[in-house]
Image 1 (cartoon, rainbow, N blue to C red):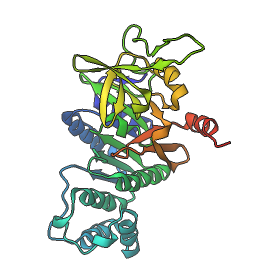
Image 2 (image 1 turned 30 degrees about the vertical axis):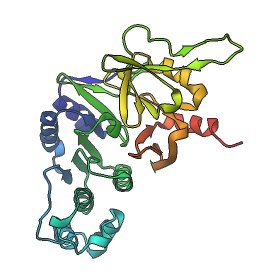
Image 3 (image 1 turned 135 degrees about the vertical axis):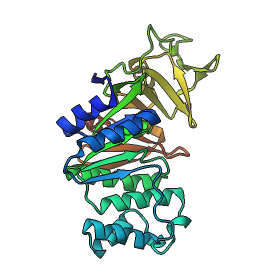
Image 4 (image 1 turned 90 degrees about the horizontal axis):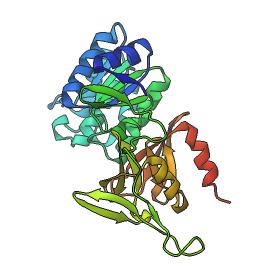
Length: 318
């Protein structure tokens, strides 16, 4: 598992030396330092920056704002029109920037960056304000630019969002940076986990399965059908139920083995998903897949390249 002593060391090794995109769950101070590190290694490459503090020019309309940056970047009217279309801004092209929702302001920021066809791009919490459809537009643009050779550095988002983007995901703990490409027991608690399955009547009878999780000082026993997905983050495993995360002492291997018979699938080293809750599969590049759930938040989970074919075979309709 890759480990770095600082975000500066991460950027120098992964971005400057290896030319890889990195996506980092970290503190606000580390976001600031990550941006400075990207600026330091940018050199002569075309750069673009997406910051939470970006607000646009309030007195401009969406279209005039993009045309201004189009002139700076050398883009023509067709490029501006394409940016408006890709990011779903056509129907508010004449709206003042000051009147935009937070989501549309975020989309405007990505539309602006797209005009420059950047070679290196820094984004601060890029998916924060985006709903499911807007998130899909942004992820597809990031995927297209990655295929074209752009190196992305994103910072400040939850690890789950970092894993959705092409590149390598990392997380910060006590100032050190760790790769999210964990082993098969990712996030396992020390020692053996609590028993996940109780055999009440013998091997030939009904088997009752409950997943033990913590809720404050209490221990809850969850029916697998209640669980949307299992997430491993920062060395702790969580079961997600209706938007709430509950820690469990069970390892990912134990959870995978137990939940497989209930229609769950290990879609990524750090995720086990209830396939009954998957509404669609999104593909952004040849090797980048996301699973979108049917929960209220339309949660997106990463589907790793190596597991996509396995999932296709296992759940193929007969």
